[in-house]
Length: 287
Image (cartoon, rainbow, N blue to C red; front, side, top):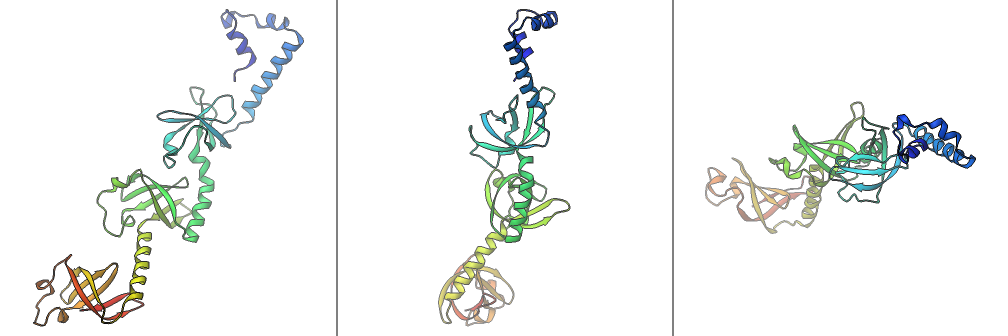
């Protein structure tokens, strides 16, 4: 919104520095002077009521390739980098978003807003709740960094160590960038505002659940099919959908075996008979 004087000057075919404003004002009738006064009060109010770091609700009125234009009922619309909405791929015109006034005016006179800064205070409360409850949360993988990934969790940048991405080693971190995944908040350092999340913890929890289901169905003498997982000098470990069983070297063959690798190899599928199993350790002795 421009002030009354600006609006009048825009309609005069006279250079601003040459215009006699005092003479013009003296010629205004009472209604015109009141309108001018009201407009100036509105203009002044829109400036004084808005302070930096204020948190408001704005409406997205336009989207460009790089920015979201947001209306907060100020004299001008504000801009927010689309990078702050990368977690929200469905952002569209008409959406209401929480924003913080970053700068009332930059060097070009543009109102600068931040969506990320507006989300941060509530985000810390939410992240702490997730840590205490162990609840699963969706996070947006923003980028890779040394030793892991940066994940947006409710507006907080959390660290996902490379060792916590999966139960198996991951070589190509880039394949996860730009994806939304499920995580568990495993560590928070309030002093340094650090948050660590894990996707591996969820996979391990699923595997543990599968183990319990499998163990519940095991019976001595039962014949099952498994895969050779690891070969040692004293025997072979067999994987049956997450449950590890051991075939001792003496149970591999009727004849003498110097090393289990003489009989089996990694990844080989074999049939085994359950000799015994431990409900608590979820490990079986097979033959």
